[in-house]
Image (tube, rainbow, N blue to C red; front, side, top):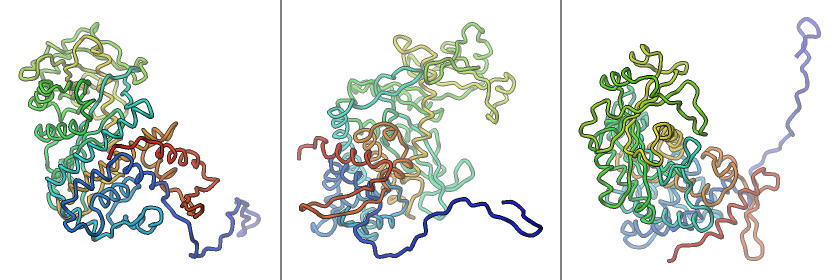
Length: 478
């Protein structure tokens, strides 16, 4: 903008948008067309049929909407970015694409009928679908990918457990004040680091302890039950948590699982106690080794050392090791008085990975630091259902959390089974904007219903290819 004379201005041309004439008389056009991919994937993995079997007792006269289909539609809605049961209208109003969708009151009645016994059946149904999805990944792709740390692959599977706070803005059953001064719930969740699948979760009151061993044991056992038998037995399974998972009873449970043929190991954060501080001060400089970045290069201003044998670990499983990392703190880092005195930030963890093989302190430290990716999974999970709970009743919200985990699984299986390139690593927000929320046109021809994606949409080929791969997936036997 330039001044021509006092009180007058000349506005520079900035380009104009084309003029539109808006009307509400379009036909054959649908939105969120890519979400049909999720619904079909639920069918292809056997999730819909398994849900129908699990929820059959809730349909006593065999009339009305199938409860399993309602549960699947709710999961698809959450994966598509819905936040409330009323968001089912997005699918319901496009019946030509998604078929008959239950009304909001019907969906509410289903959730209200889900008690702990029904939840167990839903979890078993999801485990059955996961087994099918993993078999499909083995037959059509390269199977379940390995976790990478320090430039190397971590053998087996990695389970990350963490708690998160969910704020409630109204009175809900079991919502309570949180340790951060808020009010709401404090769910504990477990993700599979290899793929990002939501393996298990338990809804808890806001004042539930972050380090409650019984809750960690329950969530871990639920997660292990989700792993197909072929992988649960004979495969190394690493369990990672922050210091909230360092309770002796929890780590003893992880070790005792080996007696049942489940090869579990742990890598958990540990508090920097006074005995740990004394051990750190007693370490000679020559035992410190450079820490690693995730790509295997040396990490600047960071070092790792073994503290095993220098502090008391009585009561912990035999073979437990304790390792410390020290690093120049980044600006704004929260430091303890000990860290301020030393001028370095110290973080300690416990592991029972033996010295042989992959057991160097440098690799184990960078492997444990990779646990931080669970924060990304939780952040994405909160946009896929469990960032907001819809009901005043705790049981309904517990069912909502389970359906949120299903939605996370559907998005993960879509990436693993149907996508390539950058979309195979995309977070839910990107998948929604590029694939799931795309508009398309419905046409009829040759006794078929055609979904025609815009020829100018940048990701049209990726979405079409995903539908073609979905059609080619091997189906489970009836």
